Structure formats: C-alpha cells, structure tokens
Amino acid sequence: MPVPGGLVDADLSLRRSSPQRSKRIIDVVVAAVALILATPLLIMVAVLVTVGLGRPVLFRQCRAGRHGEPFEMVKFRTMRPPNLRLGLLGDRDRLTPLGRWLRATSLDELPTLWNVLRGDMSLVGPRPLLPEYLSRYSPHQARRHEVRPGVTGLAQVRGRNSLSWEEKLDFDVRYVDSHNLRVDLKIIAGTVRTVLRREGISAAGSVTAPEFLGTPRWSPPPRGNSEPMRTRSGGVR
Image 1 (tube, rainbow, N blue to C red):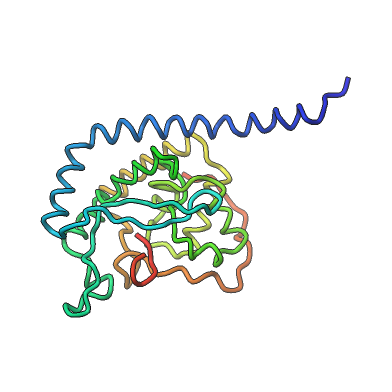
Image 2: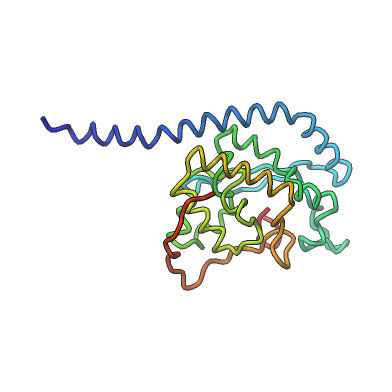
C-alpha cells in the first residue's frame, strides 16, 4: 500500500531537525556550564575594562543571525569611543593595549556565551557579520545563514582574519554542508590551538578585518574536499 506523501515529508523533516535539536541542547548545556565556571574570569575582565576604558563595559552591535534575522551581539569592549579632539577616529587609534590583549586571548568573546543561551548563536558556526553585508553576498555565500552563527567556526581554525573574505565565506558554506558533532568537536579543539598560538588575529594592514564590499565577478568555487577539519571602518570584530 503506498505511503501518504504527507507522512513521508513529516518523516524527512523529523530526521533533518533531530541533529539541530541535539546541537541546540549541547549549546545550552555547554554555554550554561561555561558561564558558571567562567564567572570569576568574567568579573576580572569586567573590572579591567572598567578601569582601562570606563563604561560601558560591554560592546553591543547588531549582527545578522540565522536566515539573516538581526540580533544584538555582546562582547567586552576593547576600543575607546571616537573622539575628534583627541584624534581617536580610526580603529587603530581607538584600540588600546588592553583591547589588543583581550582580542589576542579571545577573552572579549566570553559574553557571547549569553547569545548562545538565548538562541541567537551556536557554539560552532559561521561568525555573525553585519546586516549591511546581506545584500553583498553571492547566492553561494548567502548560504552561510542557513545555520545559526557561531562563537567559533571553520574559518576561524583555517586562518581567521589572515584569510581573504572569499576564503572565509567559502569555509562558512563548507561548514553548512558538512557539519555534525564530530566536525564541531574538531573545530572547538582547533580553536583552542589557534587562541593559544594567537594566530590570524588581524588581517594585513588592519587591526581586525577590512569591510566586506562584495565579491566582483563571482563564480562558484571549485569542488574539492569539502570536509571541514561596526566598527567605524565598517569591519567586524
């Protein structure tokens, strides 16, 4: 007897959603435990930022999440506010020694665990970028928004800001096509190594990464091994 089409569709939908539900459960548990264990460290960094930079302690910025939906991402502040009188206009002038250290050690990212708990982000996924970039992606690059953005991702362990925008976005899509628990664990382990070695913190000629202006004459990347192992200038951090 033939199986009703609706039941087949429901079964396929259930199979596809199960890994996402498991990933979400892991995100919530790990983020909650990490926030509890890191509370003394969060307090220490908050005090350092208050003394070194003043208030506010947190940097808040709108980013594009899953399906391009906007959300407010929180991090520890690493820059002084723009000040024309003091000549603090560009990112390089506004970034403090404390801010450089926080970025090098990725301690400025600790508050984003709150975004993971809220469901805005995942522990692993493409890094959340500015909403202004949504219209600049090629159809291939826009697929990075098929999953929740992550605190870390494949591009971060493959070169971080030393990669070109095209390379980073291609790694993001590779992750979308092949992510699973094993891949996520490999990326988390690779992130620890990258942070300890302080690799790829900034792009050449930039304190972080330049603004993404789009990819001219875009063409699909060659098919190969796809297994993963606002600031004033418009860039992201």
